[in-house]
Length: 294
Image 1 (cartoon, rainbow, N blue to C red):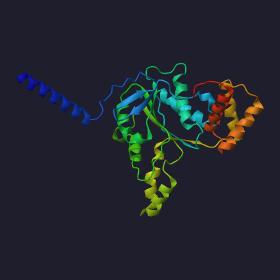
Image 2: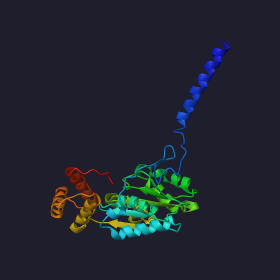
Image 3: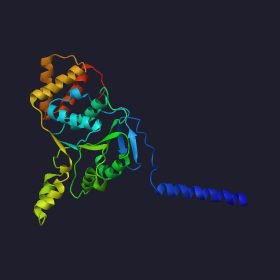
Image 4: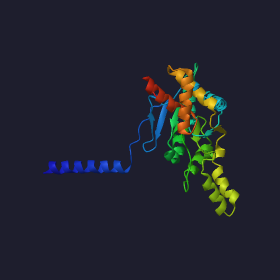
């Protein structure tokens, strides 16, 4: 009788333990910072998910943005070497390689001869919907020997979205100041990260319109570098096409390549790096050429 009672008591304790663990949320995972060069932040568990094969292209294939490419590379190079560097906002036209440039720049610098192995450069992607966890992530990385680029792709804020305040606080660093081993890179189609109608509404309904808009616009001021991306010209578009074709060994007559590329852009109603890549994928498929996505 006593043995059965003891068994029931142990089972009840186990059920209570499982219930407490479920209420406390996911168990915190142990992060292995040497597992990869690129990670994805999972805020629910406080875990940095290693990315074994990052989706990125060689920096030499990113055309038409030479000036901003060089500025971003120089800023990242200084940061990797332990010198002060700025947070960066890459904004502008869709499909012109903003996120590709961030990933390609990181790959280029970590692959350079003489890259810093004592304080390696890591790229950590944080999703737009997890921005409110950014201060926690930065606090977690502050005392690490590695140097971290925190990267958010397609960052923007909509009406009644107050998470931008978390970003503002994280970029400034608060009382402790910004962590010296962390910078924040973001891409956006909007220079001020807020929709225009939202800013205009703030201006029209506020007692002091300039102060109301200032609160929203001041977020972009936290980025020391604003790098603008604009729609490419026809020549720049064809230069992208030619670079892709040569890189992947697509054997096709030059005039035919040019004519088909222009027709493709016409049907899409745009010229951009993304449109160029989509054309190259279509062309490679028609030519029976196999290659991995960049």
